[in-house]
Amino acid sequence: MKNILITGGAGFIGSNLALKLIRLGHNITVLDNLSPQIHGLEPQYGSPLYNSIKNKVNFIHGSVTSETDWRKALKGQNVVVHLAAETGTGQSMYEIKNYVETNISGTALMLNILANEKQTVKKVIIASSRSIYGEGKYRLANGEVVYPHHRSAADMDQGDFEVKHNKESVFLVPTDEESRIHPSSVYGITKQNQEQMIMTVCKSIGIAAVAFRYQNVYGPGQSLKNPYTGILSIFSTQIRNGNNINIFEDGKESRDFVFIDDVIDATILGITKDEANNEVFNVGAGVATDVVTVAKHLIKAYNAKVNLNITGNYRLGDIRHNYADLSKISTMLGYQPKVFFEEGVERFSKWVNTQEIQQDNYASSIEEMKLRGLYK
Figure 1: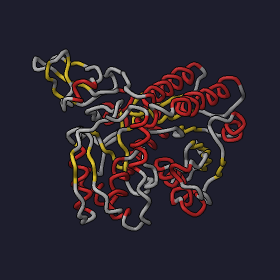
Figure 2: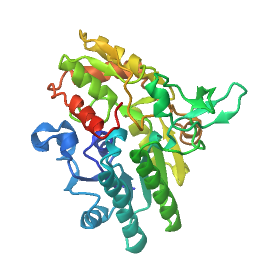
Figure 3: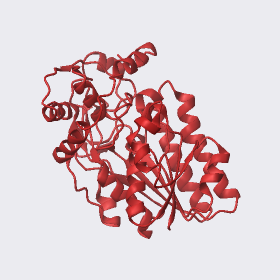
Figure 4: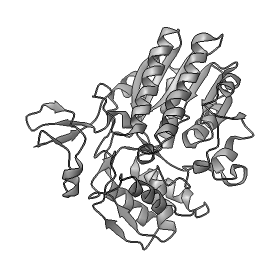
């Protein structure tokens, strides 16, 4: 499995994965469109991610929406790690055509080539997402497992942000791979579709497939330019510009924040271990951390004097809670997260302090959502 194609390989996860695989002796090809939202308008000068790999890989500046680019990239490959995607739940609710074309149609192009043309690919890894679960897994007071419907705007307008099941209170538990899939955003729908297509088609044509449902990935190297996704990078850019942080809802909404090194280790296990073949795995830290805790850690890390405002505003399509049950990936692949949140934030903030301060465009991204009625 020496020849590995990474789509989106100039991105945050992709570039880190490429560099580690190179150190392990693999030949890496990267297909990436160098999106300005992530890499800036002049990536050759302003994108640390792209510059970290450009002279170490066979780099193809192209798009997963191009059949020609796919054919060029797939030639001679043994493994495909398909990371390229439009990301971000909020933006997906109005950039619908773009998300569907890139995430669904782009994946369909790859599978069509693999299914109908002579090729050397033996395994495909798909970067799925925790977003396909929508709200996480819960229990009622009597112990019954439930998967609540998405929260109503009427409740949230009244400041009631907690999840309920038929008006009953529920208790959060870790979400396992057998949990109900009910995405609450177009992004989540496209990731579900990607995963299902790859796991179905690859099996039918004799190619091993592995799906990793990544939780919220963060760490050094994360794009500080993108105002649409990556809460730690968004908050960091706001803080370094001296801007106050406005927290959605009541700040108690939580996510599973997983450090980039752990994500890379998990992905390589999927590439190298036959036990991973044709399986779906959660990848996370296995711990729920609320947004206020994230913001407070970052303010302390930067020794900043900015205010933390709990606004009560919310975005349609956001979930309340979700964190990963890691039992399956631990048992089958031996994965254990090594970097937990306090250490991860420290390492991330130290790296951020070595970077140029980026323009804070978060307010403009919120205005876009307001104009479309998606921000309340």
